[in-house]
Image (cartoon, rainbow, N blue to C red; front, side, top):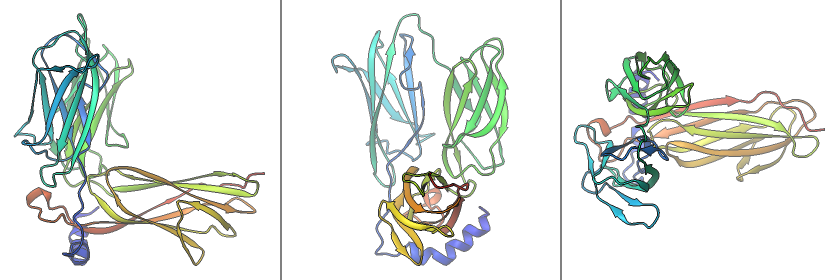
Length: 346
């Protein structure tokens, strides 16, 4: 989305979206990348776990702990939010011993105090090797800028596919050397949305690792829709499903999904129950944080093949009490999605 549009949109809708009586929107942090990954087997040695979230964390209230999976006994571990990268929670297991373990974290957003808990399993075994790792030359970039991606611990002489974002947009491909390492310069695609985005490296030999890159402005739209149809469930009917994905770190509000009845179709039912007016159905979702919502389902009775056309409007409000990089622009925007033609079930 052009920056000029953001500025104009801010001027036009700031008063609407930032009304003093409006509730403050907040969302808990989302885990974007972790090393080592969940479920991995590690050598019995000092290991630092790096957990990267999509919001800056409170160093005073964010923490992590490690315990044995067998009996729940705690293990000595230190956790800290790095001052140089407040999105990252690092955890050092100080006295590694062979066994099965759980790592539990409590991540608290620095600005809103919204919190989330999560955990992952891992094991320590003698003669195990460290899992593959991918690193970036910078922690933040704009779309269109170049970032150097390096990796180690992958398969030897093996092709590696690099992607970025929750929707795994192609970033680059590279081949590892005789040691299973690689380094390549890649340009951030123009439509990668704003936010802390995962950079995934997957080789053809079965190894994978993830890092995180903060995309400062990002491409457009932050929210995408998928309108998919199929015949049925009853004879003479077709059903369409609309799924929404907020692939950005904007907390979107008043997300309005509108579907006009296809030409010649008769409305049968929808789930969840929509508002229906003038041969059009609509749903309003109060807020959508990062992730997938839906599907929204609608069934029609038809006599031939028809398509569904979904129109989606969404908004973002300037965060209350924000400062500096937290003051994201306010906007009202839209996106669309159209299904392929679908014929009625026989």
